[in-house]
Image (cartoon, rainbow, N blue to C red; front, side):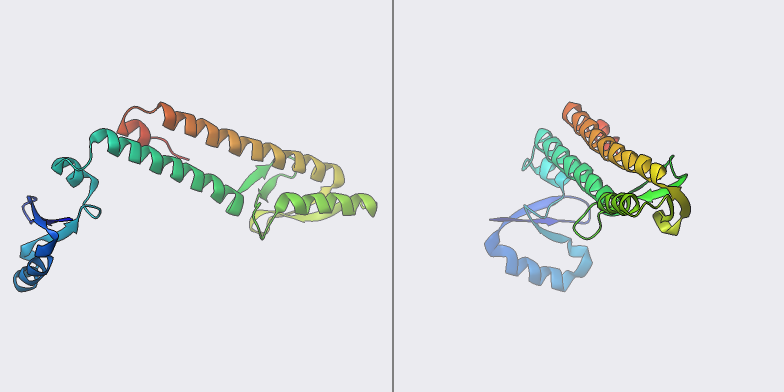
Length: 178
């Protein structure tokens, strides 16, 4: 295994792994002016390219993979903490669908309860405790909005993934945002 010493001037020297102890002693004696010791894995991508350990193409592929992950995580966060504005109710509505909170399921239960109990309207609590009086028909419309929001989120994720697929430059990748 090779280790690398990056000096303060940016130059990088390579050493065999058996030199690690000696380099650490030199670093201890000289302090920060000695530089930093890296393994191939811990070098920055730019340094890896400079040393020929990685190509620009490999870096671009890596960055595409990271961008897919970023978009996937943002999509998942929408299902953990998401909300949208309901035109039917005139307030923001929680849109959490995860293992502990499922707002769509809660609305389904509310619709069933109101229908079975012949309740015409109820107070509905939305995002961050916004409240409004809602009729059964308004709640049914809101449910359709929730389903539509889910479809919108999926479409947004799909479009961003297509943009990642089609990106040919680092700048194009950087401009892809959730």
